[in-house]
Length: 282
Image (tube, rainbow, N blue to C red; front, side, top):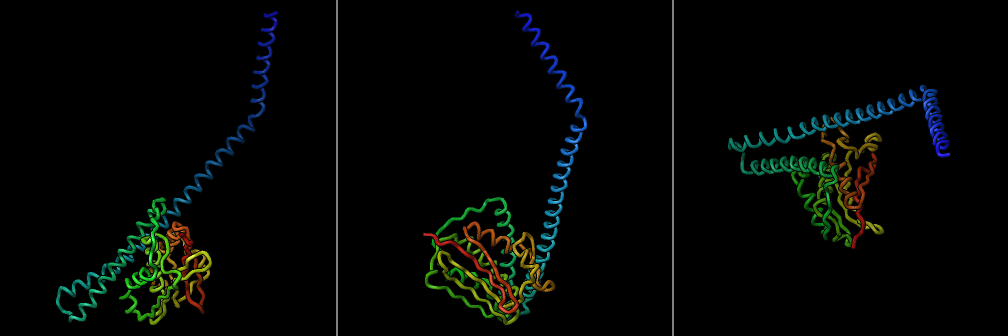
């Protein structure tokens, strides 16, 4: 009885193996199709990865070219100013003006370098906000005063208005300062001579708002669609304004880090306004 059971099991196993082998033999086309599909998926993934790498490399090349241009201009300017100061050919009044220009050039180079470092930290997830109570009017005033030479040189009219209920808010002062500095820099850069810039702080519902407005050239629809892209310079006058294009990208990322947002409007008749929205924190 036991021998008969063993034979039946062995016979069943042989039939199962033959059936499995025959099934595999009957589907070589299916196996080849699956192999081809797998190969196509791998090829598509490789092509997509290569395209992404090519785009990133092209963006980085454009970024380096723009950065080189931006750093070259203030460096040439500071070199010329230092040469004039050393030669003692300037009057006392001219020396003060030259030193102010020198300070402005160095601040602009420092701002570009800090932007690059912050973008690297932000993309790597390395920025952690440290919240504290920040007095808004003094901070806005300091951000504007940092560009006093540029403002005087272009004869701009700059005003700061802060509502009473936005006197002090809970946020990260350093990150907020970086955002406002970039927005004020852009507003001055894209303002026409004798133009106007307005910086406001106000409260709407459960949010704080900080607005930076200028009456300069408006953006095109194409520029509006890509204004916050990485390494994009959204110049409104390509011949006179150049830049690395990371200031607005960084500013919006920092706004999100502060649990807020950065939006804008830009119209021919009403100028360009960037609005930073921050949540009300206790």
